[in-house]
Image 1: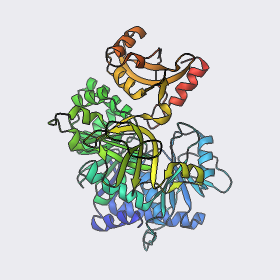
Image 2 (image 1 turned 180 degrees about the vertical axis):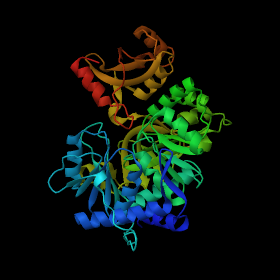
Image 3 (image 1 turned 90 degrees about the vertical axis):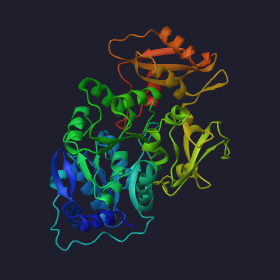
Image 4 (image 1 turned 135 degrees about the vertical axis):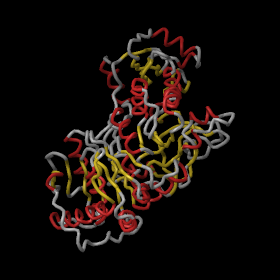
Length: 500
């Protein structure tokens, strides 16, 4: 089942419906969107000899052409390799070589390895749309998207996602995240090479509008303007983006009008940050927890769940990452893979229709990640008695101090509530006496200068004393990848180098 069939079907049904906007300017109707995808597919095949299964990389900033090219690749049966546009050329070259991409389409000229051609976006030359071939006939297990993980712990791995994987992901959105409709507008302020781009599918199927900000990126002021213009906006955002939107809205007075749903994921949303965002924007939020290996689909807090304050344990539920999504099974397991009871933390395992086929050209890594049909996520969490999952940390981030387990997320949650703390990240550092000690990297709010002892006392009053930071390092910002995830590997490197 080729996902390009969804676009073709919508174009037949709603040819004149507005589809893609560049800022406030209409770029294409659905009829034009499909015609452009079909003609681009024909051009790529005729000029570069591309065949079914060939990989085509997209090294592009967000723009209206992104969606057209994505569907063009699928139209002829190719595999899309979306690459973060903020990567260094050397990182791009590595991904192109590893994926065996035949072609990379980029905003500006880029060096390409042997066997790969670099094509600048401005040099695309689509053929006439008349008589264009229909989307290629593909089996459901055919590869659709080769997603390279963000590489926070080393070289990124290519996650193999099939058309069936992505179809299941898209359909689960309506059951588990929000109620999509044709009168909604999908806004792409986060990188389309990642989760924001994946969410296009359900909105294409319904014939909704797609808006790419004129800036090509994330600008809270621009989002406020677009919300007023289009109304009923839906967007995916990293928690750091939600925080920036909240801070800006406090200054501008924006209350979220025109935004239907802000879906957050891709990193920890601390309880304090969520409370501040909801105080500013109201109940407009949904949460997803997923990985590239099971894209956007492990657990979710449906929009209605986050808006429900009637439950006696509503606060705990809202601090969780929700319940298992409809297309997967989720288990919290011990080292042997056996399920653990509610309240006991363990590694999170998942299996189901969205779980990847494996890692590209990496059989050993695949065998390590996929065991007995389950994906080992490397994340630690626990279920409550009602099936709500609370994330604790990555397995590798667990701190063992004096024989006691300390989960950085728990310490971060406490520090994030301090009125002088803007951002926080906690890691473990080697300690001759305790094995490891807790180190907190703190970004202070403007015009605040918290004292380390004050922060230690704050923690001691709220969590066990052995969990409090033994060292606090103040910094102007936290290192993040372009998806908003804090790079704790970089923080560890700062500690080893003796600076911050």
